Length: 161
Image 1: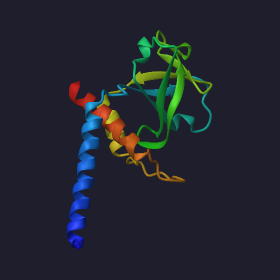
Image 2 (image 1 turned 90 degrees about the horizontal axis):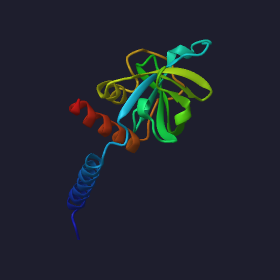
Image 3 (image 1 turned 135 degrees about the vertical axis):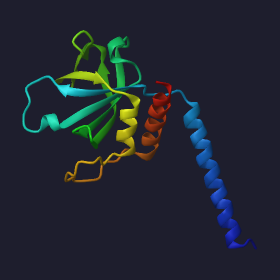
């Protein structure tokens, strides 16, 4: 019979090996998302819309969008301080981006976009609740695997730049 403590140690070793393998795989993969943009409403504003600032994460720069469409991550922030919600796989068509005016159309609204540094993205992802005390119907959360991948992508970039 195997002692319970030996089973526990073996389980911990297996879990540790799995985490190390996952971390190696994530860091060995090329960054899926390399660019981040805050979006500021360019259309008529109603209510507290300007408080909820979308953060767009893309694999290609918006100024050089040469593909017909791009799947992006849209993270809605509250005052660029905390994460309110997130949505993965949002489709952005090349026709929706106007590089000359640095504007784009997303969900029937027109925005001005401004690229931000990878460090700013990492700061937000590491502290999704932010510093501004606000009431939330639920705790903002990205799925753990998605959060880990986004953090890996932007941490790697923050050391490059």
